[in-house]
Image (tube, rainbow, N blue to C red; front, side, top):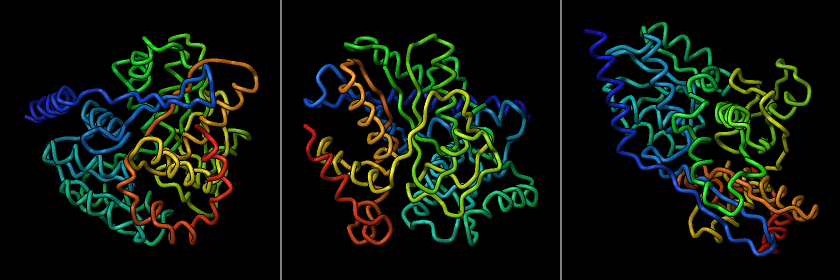
Length: 347
């Protein structure tokens, strides 16, 4: 009977995938960069609203095929953001209980979205406690701890199967520069950057993977030092990316280079993008696009032409009380005007 349920669950996830169209690839027209095209892979259009929809689907399939998830298995995840929302979506699809372990300071909007999909939130005092609390809950409830920070890099088929890298290169095939000079991605678990980097090598593309990292994240230091014990005292202020410890799913050896991005630059860029796109995007998209613009400037200075692709990770509607609130930005991020002025000069 358990095998029959697992078969049914996998078919449900596959059917949900077939009902979902591929996400759009948006080309930004920037006159200041002749011969250089910048593209955004818009992951906000997934049913659960973010790039993490892909990860959640992969983690559920991985758990099902490994025999870790069975009928009525409680699903536990250490996440206060988009991963928890997307996993709650799939848990509801399969009729499974879902618990997200998160700090007590998590924004109410995120909690509401998890609960909308039938999930429950378990609160801890600080972000460093989410891992142990998730493991304890899984033991007590005889559940499965998804552990996105460990399994993100191995749950996705990086060789193809319509993963995000495969989708990007297919959608770029008719563009003036179909093989991007750069792919730019920020890291939360490190799973997406691992998929992109492995796919580039597997396909033999002449594309460099550049990972951008926000303040209060150790990924940049880990990349430079290869010291997995490196830690930070604070958590990233750019939700969904950056970590205070080197997560197992972050694979530095598949990355060509990294760039540190000031949080003020990320926030200034998401406001600039609202004017360019006509809609709001999240903080990690601001980080991604700031990094992509710096690479475009380098290409222009070197007389290069080509394309750069980065990700629009989620909608800004989730951040109306933070990144789009002037008072919150002034208190938590500081003065962003120096970066705003740089961006306002672009056309």
